[in-house]
Length: 327
Image (cartoon, rainbow, N blue to C red; front, side, top):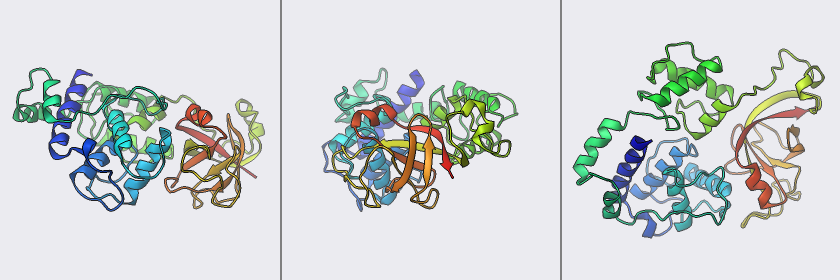
């Protein structure tokens, strides 16, 4: 963990060198530059943005910011203002956990100058020495660190063991994220309805820690054949989705869905190309719901589950679940 803190701190030095976003105007759609690239890198670190950090504030960045704002109970406008940036910075540097954060929780202020950052790092006297340190530790991954191709360390050992447990990796557990390991990771991500980008971040760790596996429809005809799923109605198929929560009580959200119905418990927002509007589903722990809404960030195997209160949304958080398409 010490190496991880040092790495993030040193990377922040360079981010601050190129940007002083904390005191700059809000960033919005159409903006370009190093400041935009900085927040894109923070979004990528949270697995909220699945495109390259190109410094262009396009629709993908807008949707990722909206996704982040929705998860933390902020006004969902897709604009990265001071409050959004502060929380995004804090999440990227592990100052807060977006899965447990609630409005009102303490959030430290981002450093406002290079000197503040440098003074917080023992034995770092110049940016040049910081560059050399980064070169030495950037390839190391501890447990919980984001893991990419070419990285080594205890985190990769943990990843390989988890992939082995799930039946996706049968190679040597050597702590090296080689192509065989990354290919196994991509296969696992694909099996869970995630983007198979070969990067092990927060969401992939959560999926790896899940013990339950979805039922295989090739082995069972209907839910009556599944004793461990006796509360599930008859269904035609199971879809693995990433589920978030929303409520009309959130500032800036309409009281009505995309189909004109009231936003209420029992409604979900879906990508109509994956789950057509009007589809009836069953969500364990939630109950029956109907696809009556859509959302800019709801693309692919993602759903937004409607609740009546913000407290219920915070409790639900963000999770990977199996939903059942009801005949």
